[in-house]
Image (cartoon, rainbow, N blue to C red; front, side):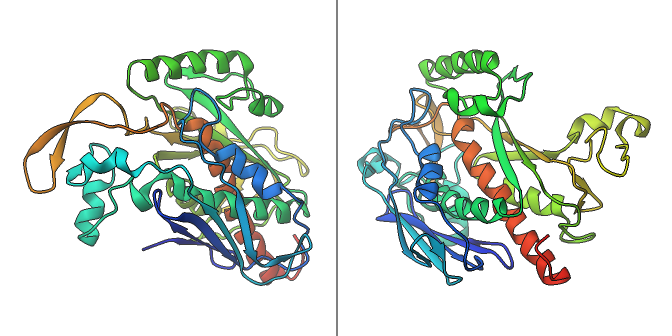
Length: 353
């Protein structure tokens, strides 16, 4: 199973949604990087369930246990292992799904691949797997900050409601994690209505990395934009990625989308900070399309493992919109990607940037 990400900064996640716990092993973290007390936990708190009425009400503390690799607040250069124990799993909520393939989920495809599956909450395919990514992302953010890289993100669309402003200081002030306070209120109404209707809605998450120097990434098979596409599409429930001007550029002319560079700054950023697969010094801008959550309480037709169909209503506690909790995960995947290409650039050029 492909549970590892990265070449020099290698992140391997483990665990299932309703198993004993989930976690991550990080190999390649440089020694001597200060990791602020509580930095990892703060990121996990942003991802954890039960944050508001707009998210799943599963009550997990998601308290991280650092098992190795950090001593007295400093990385040792050795593998860093982190564990989060599951404390509020209600596996009985899934008893009626033992022989059922839920619509929209990975139940059937997983069974077709392995011949066996963990039916409790999706097992390895659950969004709970992303805990390891966020914990590792906190480490990557700490390291990247030493060379001036900052990563922010937010929900910029829910259904047909779009954010018009990008006030990143606003993101943690509303439950939707939207950088536009007025749009956030309308998004919250849309999500609440979906919950009341026993349904779900999708949206778009935007991630921006500033301070990325020119020169990170590669010109052919390992282009920075290709690596970011891989990273973002590996997040559960993501179905599309665009960088910079993205799909809207298809309706424009080259005279409109060619970014003018004056030797110091770019006047526009249709390229999303990446030219020819290599960072160009502008902000790296990525948007991720997030599908509506597949677990909904409405009656649906589902296939039975032995053949035929049945009607199911998905019990348990689920998000009516996944976007608010995807934000810290997508930020983490941006950080993991940039961390890996930074280390590869250091190896190539022998300098910090």
